[in-house]
Length: 340
Image 1 (cartoon, one colour):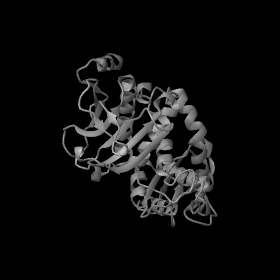
Image 2: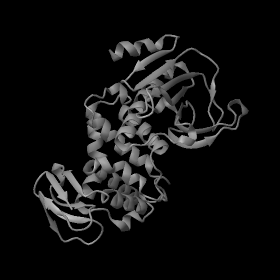
Image 3: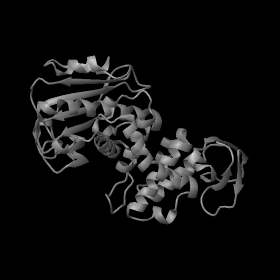
Image 4: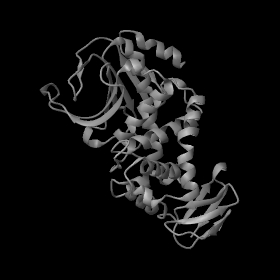
């Protein structure tokens, strides 16, 4: 069915692709008044619009994404990026409980640029033109499209830039880049995509499940495993380089796996924009509760770290000595139940 619907996109009239009962993509290849990107003023005559139904508000469709292409030959790429971003919005909204920033109209603009250096960029821009009344944009750029061809890398790039656009900012890093929410986004989103059995490769920039699984094993699992085994290293979190960034990303990947219902709450309670604040948010968010059920992955069986304070009753694990935030336990079951 998807392939039949997708085939309609190449008509001149606008076409709609329904991804679910709350996600839809509208694409038009009719040349109209071009959009002008805010950073460079480049023209984009081809458009796609992603609509979502936001839970708890109404049953109307709300514009969440505007995608822009400079030539017709990249229309399929525009469609692919729109499909993936709608899926990522759905993950972000349902699993974290956050939406696009309200100060930008809850819209993310995506510019598929044929120029520039290969790679991507996200930024918050104010237009330099009266054409759009000097509008403020939450914008993603993908540059040099002729080199944007490897599906798994394309999915990673889109997920990375969307992480910058939607996830709470954590910064203070000096390399590989200032802000870490892009790296968190690529790891978190690609893991969720790989785990979604209903996800079609058309929703992942053409990447297959095998390619996504391989990427997750190589990049995500080692970061998660480190936090399960050793807990967050506060000395590393206070750093400025790649190891500090890995520790921050691993911390939230761990929370998403061990305490998925508290992920958004932990991000909200961070109270700052540095990696140390992220740990404070995790400790506060997890310890708001008085009971937990934790599913321990096979690779983490044995001694593991839990961000739980105080005296508790534990089933499925035995508490051991631990200096620092949280507690260390030896897990002898895959399922641990804890209650104050």
